[in-house]
Image (cartoon, rainbow, N blue to C red; front, side):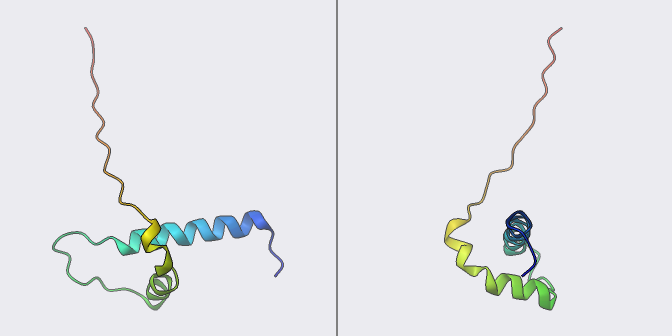
Length: 66
């Protein structure tokens, strides 16, 4: 194929990240418009659905001591 293992790993990780971002829909958005490429990613990576978890948003609190 002409690609090394590190490049394939980066490619896979970026598509996996793209899949999880496409899978998320915000409340009230309705059905988002997706390109053919986005739809292909959702279809081909749907096997990851049981292995992806929603991560709670982190809240950053800064405290200053005087």
